[in-house]
Structure formats: structure tokens, C-alpha cells
Image (cartoon, rainbow, N blue to C red):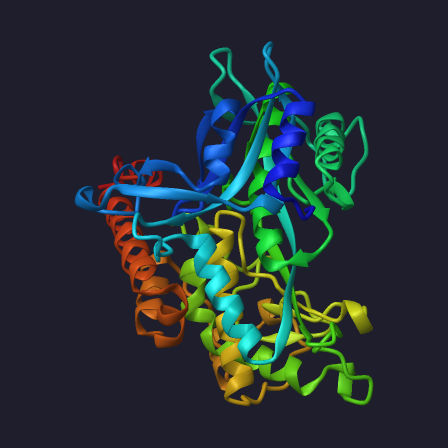
Length: 446
């Protein structure tokens, strides 16, 4: 992102013949929303004078509190390379949400993260750096343009064309992202047929979350151009790997140095890193409701498909929930492997940050790393080692979240209450539905 002023944005919009601007924000479910305005209203928008009806957004305001204002973040000004109308170009700005009183709206996920990052800075850290590894599936569209569950390829991990039938689509996604100034690291076919992963450089948490929302938008638009549907649903197909979003985290001190690195310590991990890990593990069962927020998320968190199910950490064990990648120095980080791409990134990073900071603030001690394959152990043996399971369904995760005062404070009462209500309703809808599995299993048998 570039540091921009109001005057620079207005000048750039005129020079590039921008005719429409998308003022974007994210709802509690993590869905990117927008209010589109013509270029003649850009100056009003930059002066924070564009209003929208918050009562129409799931989890936002009540009908009597409808009016809300969009405050654009000037540094997120971006001309969308894939959206060119016959009249001119389209640009976008990520926005924070404010009340008519001029107060920040406490139900805004973006501002929830900003509030938690402010707490981090008050504890003596400069940056919360994030690198995400979002996975997604590409499925064919039917003759009406609706998504199917038919793969467009039968490739596997790191396969090439012709086995990897989506190579051109994935390459176009990368090129589109590079046009938007993303710094790409790698793209490849994942383990399951039709599954892909594209990684971009780590960044400050707020920019990383903005970039992730933009990334999803690009992936879906480019896939549609190729006659495909891209989905970040964690487990669209049973009995194959689901899609995760491994989340790499690190803190920097006030001098900009990696606070997780200490060459003199075991594994070259600082005391800060170990306390961070302890906090993550303490709150893992509760924050899973946020980092894995759908009924479908828990179809991925099962043994046998590379997704972590047990709360543990290691520097050399991919069955652990928290892994320490081998790189040290500036790149020392914790990789939280349980997160999936259906999560609202602003809320997910908020609860992860709050969990780690709780460990640091209270000088928690991390348990020893685990080097054995946890998938090969039975539950009784794991419990003897003190290794807990992640929640097995959304209902259990919500129960854990409701008990965690640290995470409720991190989310704020408005976000927590609305999120809990939305997700409890989702669970109840699932609980009373009758699935195809039940029909096939019992209809003829009973």
C-alpha cells in the first residue's frame, strides 16, 4: 500500500479516468461489502460524508440505529485492473465505519483489529506481522453458470499441466495480483483434485487482512473469467483434504526487530515467543469459533487429512496445531495451522493476537514441543500427555468462546454478541436439517 493524500487520490482518479469507486467494508461474517459511487462523489467520500444503511447488514445495527458513515483509508486507494467499463476505470477504498456522532462503530471488524493492535503497541511492540496461506477449490460451472462439484482437473500436490488443468487460471490470478502490487511468493496445485494455494508476502496485520479480502475478490473474478467457480469453503468434498489458511505470525519490538528470535535460546526462540505460544494454546479451543466459524469448518478438522485436531506445538511436526518453520532471524514465526479461509480475517487476527498477548502479559510457560505423530495416538494416550482436542463442532466451539473473557474483550461486546447469535442460529439450522447421509443410511433400514 502507498501513503496517499486526498489531493493525490483526486488527481490520480482524474488522470486514470476513474468513473466509479467501490467503498468497501467487511461484515461480521467476513463478507466484503461495498457502496459504489460515481467519481463526482469521490471528494465527498474522502471527506467522510458518504452514508449507508447499517440495519441492512447482518450483525451491524438495529433499524433505529441505521445511519452509518464510511471513512475511507486513503492508503488503500487502488484501481481495479480487471474492472474496466466502457466509460472508464473502477477504483476501490477500504473503509472504517463510524456513527453519526463521529464515534467509531464498535461492530466494525476492521476497527476491532485496530483496537487490539493498539493494545499490542501499548505493551511495547511495534508490529503484528501476518503471512497467510489461503487454499481454495476450483469447480466447473454448469450450463446456467451455477457452480457444480465437478473438478476441472485431477492434479495433486505440485503437479504440472496437463494433470494440473487449472495452471492457466492460477497463473492469471497471480498476474492480476501482481498488477495490484501484491508481492507474490508461490503458487501451486494442492493435495486434493481441484485444490490450489497462492501465497503472498507477509505484512502488517491490518494490511494483510485488507489484502486477503482483495485476494479472495480477485480469485473469484479471474476464476469466473475461466468458466470456473472458486470457493474458500473449508470442506466442499468429503474424504479428501479440506482447505486451510495457515497463519504465520510474529511480533516486532520498538526497534523493528523480530521479538520471537533469540539466538542464545533453545530452538532460537525467545522467551516472548514461548509465552506467545502458551497463550495461543490456552485460548485455542475458544478462538476456534472465530478462526473456523462455519458448520462446515469442523468437517476439515478431523484426523487423516493433514488438518490439525490437537492443541500442541513443535518445530518439526506437521500434526501439531502450532508449527515453528525452520527459518530463523527476521523470519522466525509461529504458524497456526488450524485456521481456515472462511474466517473473517480481521476477527481471526484479533483473537489470535489477544491470545498471544495474554500469554506474554501473564508470562505463561509453554509446554514442551511434541515430536510424535499425534494422528497415530488414541485419545486416552493424548490426554495422559495433557494434549487437548480442538472442538469437534461449531456448537462446542461457541461454548468455549462464551467462557473466554479475554477473547470476548478482544472482540468487544457488540461483535461477540452478534457473532454468537448468528452462529448459534447457523448451528440450529444445521441441527434440525435432514441430510442426504441420513436418508441413505436410515430410510430403507428402519
